[in-house]
Amino acid sequence: MNVLSDYFRDLAQRSPRWDFIWLYDGSAADRILSGLWVTIQLSVICVVASLVIGFAGSMLQTSRYKAARLFVSGYLQIFRNTPPLVQLLFFYFALGQFTPSYSPDGWTQVPLISNVGWAAISLSLFGAAFNVEIFRSGLEAVPKSTSEAADALGMSRWLIFSEIQFPLALRVCLPALSSNLINLVKTTSQAFAIAVPELLYQSASLWNDNPAAQNPTMLLLLVVYVGLVGLLSLGLRFMERRMRVPGYGV
Image (tube, rainbow, N blue to C red; front, side, top):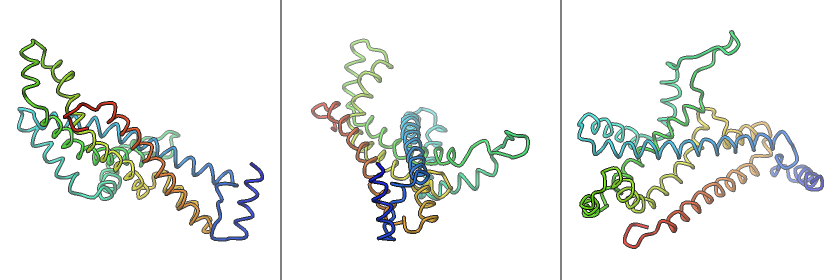
């Protein structure tokens, strides 16, 4: 390991524009790893929350209550037709100023929702706005004859939905859902704009402190995001293959 560290330290002296500082400087490596961990956490939270909110929204779209349908329609219009960066800035700067705060030490005031929290809320709602339509289209693609046949066999409404309608709908909408979730993971990098210490933020602060590390760190960013998105894509493709039913979407 010392040989590798010495090599990249010498490389930084010989090629000033290619300073792989995070390969021989422990503090720089810690900053990159810390940013990567925040990116992974934020991605997982946003993916899970967007799926839950998206599914709930698709259910409300078919509600018999007009107010619920109008609420979902308004939500979709706002979050589907505005840039995610604008939404992030609105949540953090506009709504954030009304957030209650507390004092952990009796002196400093800390907002109840941090910048990481606002990023998770904003990006989850953004991703969920597309998941609502994806889930709805999947549910509508399931032939009514399947639920009618199950009803004739005496199955309850919940059993029909959980065992027949939803599994078939998920197979139909999984390709579109996969694409949206992959896009959502990439969009988490925009949390950089509100100082969330994710990978892009930590990388930018690193090359601001060490300008010679800019090119290698940009290359690292590219490789890491390709790896993260690639792993997610492989996982979703595996799900598609396992859930394949002839005649249903995947």
